[in-house]
Length: 355
Ligand SMILES: C[S@@+](CC[C@H](N)C(=O)[O-])C[C@H]1O[C@@H](n2cnc3c(N)ncnc32)[C@H](O)[C@@H]1O
Image 1 (tube, rainbow, N blue to C red):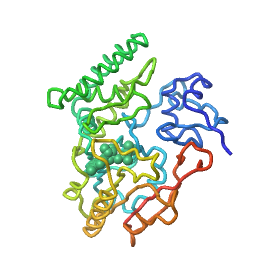
Image 2 (image 1 turned 180 degrees about the vertical axis):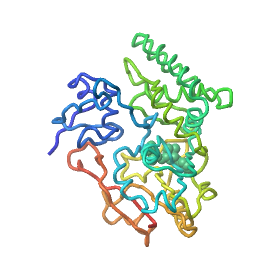
Image 3 (image 1 turned 120 degrees about the vertical axis):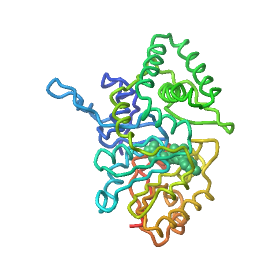
Image 4 (image 1 turned 60 degrees about the horizontal axis):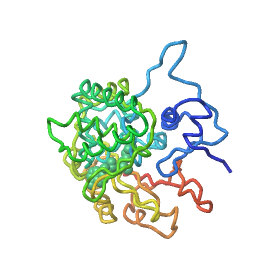
């Protein structure tokens, strides 16, 4: 059985930053890495990947990738998702919509390979969608603000870094999102995501961001190369902070819609659904399946990811019943059920398609 080490251990062993190790995991550069909760774990036998950013002394260009760490990120399933795209993509499929876009791992990867006449992304997390809009429309201003935050934080002692983090968290929570504050709020969101514990976005019932300090001695939040690339990619993209149901207005028979909703919890320990103040219940999953059917009836191509309840209860037919008649695939996910010995093992996820 494989034994694993944490990103911190790998960083020490390879003499690189923990952040770089996480990035290598997200880029699929280390074989057999897995996700345990929100953390990457790495086989202890893994070797340090050679640095693809440098070849012949020159710096190779990096691909656009998520600017934020987001629970449920699709980095490990990119190949499976791509191999399940409709065959007419780029021909009769000319439009793309992703109404639970989150960190956008699939979006960025897809747009590296395919171009579409129209693209629509949305999520009901208004702070997240504000960040996408600011990256698209105010990228230089954002880079300046991020640079200032980064320099200030990295110049502080550990104690003052903690104080700074909580001051910025408070500033984020009390500042209303308006046209005047949009750049400030996007930069605070990115700062908090990179300096909090485990890169989480989590809010309490009042909608206040409540993740504790992550104790990072230095942070790198101003990735100008990546943010500039994302800004270019987003130029003609429709970006909305709204409920997923609104995709119905955009989608037509030349559209591919990819749904990656908050996963139905497999058990009580995996019920992370607090991206926003409201949770995504079974009732929401049922409503989503109704939209899936309505879109199918309109001739829209639809692909959807979710957890597979059969990992923990083989008699649980919740999704098999909801999506009866559609193409239900069970694909390998590189994450573990939990850290406890007996149930440790790779799990399956659902990939449901109407084609
Ligand atoms: C599994 S995550 C998506 C992860 C994303 N694919 C990624 O790679 O990071 C689910 C997303 O759905 C959003 N969400 C939850 N309820 C929603 C709703 N009713 N309408 C739109 N978005 C919603 C959350 O804010 C979250 O970003």
